[in-house]
Length: 425
Image (cartoon, rainbow, N blue to C red; front, side):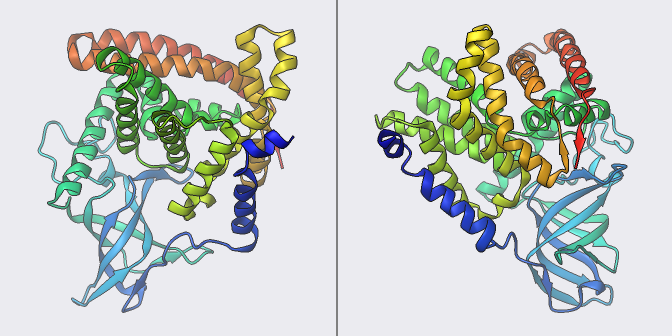
């Protein structure tokens, strides 16, 4: 008991911090939008995009993007400085103009005039009259893009490269059909090309966490980078290559709370290894990462992906030993370990889903144990096929065919588990 407390000395401070912030000291998630004149009179907005557009609404007929406000304009020529963050609703035709296969896609090799992605500085013409939700957050409805560009500096150049890279990657995934749609969701978080049937099946089967950018995706990418690093630069320099690779992956995919948690965990483990500092307890390392994460981005703690990410990993680390031992006695080694991790993860994520989603998926324990290894194989193959397709473009159709075959089995498994009834609360 004493050794356990010594090895997990950061666990109590982390729990105390979580209780204080969730119960007693609420954190302001973002600065409210403010103008000199009434927001109802705004006819156009200058802003900097803080995220990529995401489809919203039950019928998916519009996109939404979070933006930092810079200036506001009135129809009579009035100009006001603006500050804070607002949500901007975008029509389909503005976001899908360069996306292949979409209803409003009109690219066809034309020069890109504007690219709505994180970091872009845009001026939108908006409808006069704004909406606000129960928390006072302001929503604007954009009608057209008056201008869009990236800053002419180093960071602006990086953001433009990232946006163009994601666009070209999307086109490759589109060429691979439904399998490419799943791989796009797993590697970038974009579900634009994921089948609605599959997306709903993942949710009903209790597998929504698999589609969220998380530690599983980053750890797979990290292990590949380390293996390649050992062969190319040697074992001593391989951790540096691994660290660069995971930072590159997060930069490309975009910072989400769950992915940032995975980045901190991986980076801490690599740095401690390089400094020869032993990690006696993974649970203690997770507590350290939690504290650092809260200090760096306190608003993340109210995101569902943050709660599910930390909850799942905490459950695995805290309960894995107690759950896995009896399972290993009754099941083969790999099956016992996979099921034990699934039980540990679901132990803490089920209450979170019940509280915020109003549903419980009892089949999530079994479905996660079965589908997670299949998705891991799918990601490994996808990453390998992406490299092959860039080096040998004529191989792309063959790679897409193999990936579609694997995707078919994943879809069958997910659809099967989605038939297990969910409990609505």
